[in-house]
Image (cartoon, rainbow, N blue to C red; front, side):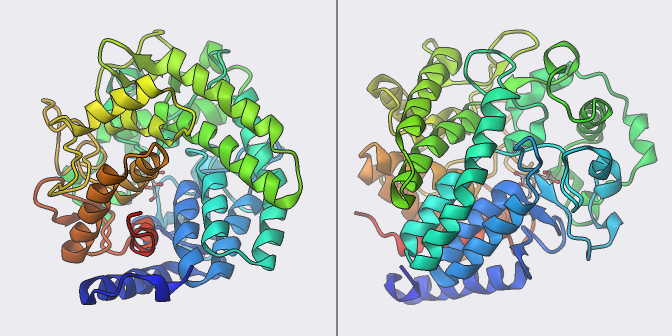
Length: 445
Ligand code: 2M8
């Protein structure tokens, strides 16, 4: 599929060109920076979403993007959440390569990386990219990525199954991708940290974004404390259950892990490998997700804090994301639909704005602070994908129209005010541009 299939209203045409310009502007020899200012390196799940966009205009870049990320895969299979670009000054982003000190770890790649991961949306992205632009060279790239994607899943399903129930745990809010979500407030509050400890560092995000839109200094002190604990343990996972201060089973992370097995089954079929084990693993992940993270009393999915054993109370957009799983039972699909169309999220066949990242009716809903209310294109894209997969085509169409309308007025910002639609964060953001291309190129069926 290419640019010529885009529905050609003048507004959509112009939006298409803006999105391509934004991706081009952030392209950096073998990857795309999420933002030239706030995030000048390569980010893991950003690259996955960005590859989907490149598939529409420059399929070779889609494969280069994913390949460069997986070139930085650790020997244990983890795909690092940041791959540092050595050409960018070390103090351009905090925490930079010196803080993570990956070079000191056996099994880390030669290039400097973080030691954390992000939601494993890469198999889904690779499969999407291939189907958007099938070709011989694409199939060859898919074949080379396949064992690396399998190793990524194996790492998560073994090293990270700290709860022993078939789900992966995240060890830091940064691993969720929804870093500042109210979902993490309770587990984060239990992490001992002092703002004073931040004195040794300089937060670079505040040079590019308003403090009122970003996490607080106390949040950052806790982020630093959690990384420090993991780094001190050599980023090993065997002591997590006893020692680590933050351990959570996240619905999005695990839905992505299950969706990855479905995507791997598709990829395996395409390249002549056996899809069977992937389909079996996918079914086990879906069952574990429903058993562990679905709360019948709220009718939605919640993260489970392994430190307390309890589900965290906030009703965030994370609760809607298990819709990504094609084999989610009908009861949970319906529960998610009900949650999504409620006044908390406002999904409708005609909706003024895309989904917010947090329950609009909650006392701690903050429309300006990142991940605590604003709308994000990647989450809306994932939910649209899930709605389409479960046959909710009219709701998916409503969501798509709201995403296009938002970007038509506000452009390719990192995130958006969930009521006014004003663009927030970085003004030229990679995954916003990439996923807009995909949404524009896939009209309602
Ligand atoms: C944000 O996260 C980074 C840390 O990884 C940060 O705040 O500095 C999140 O929105 C995350 O989901 C995203 O991958 C990253 C780069 O866009 O920025």
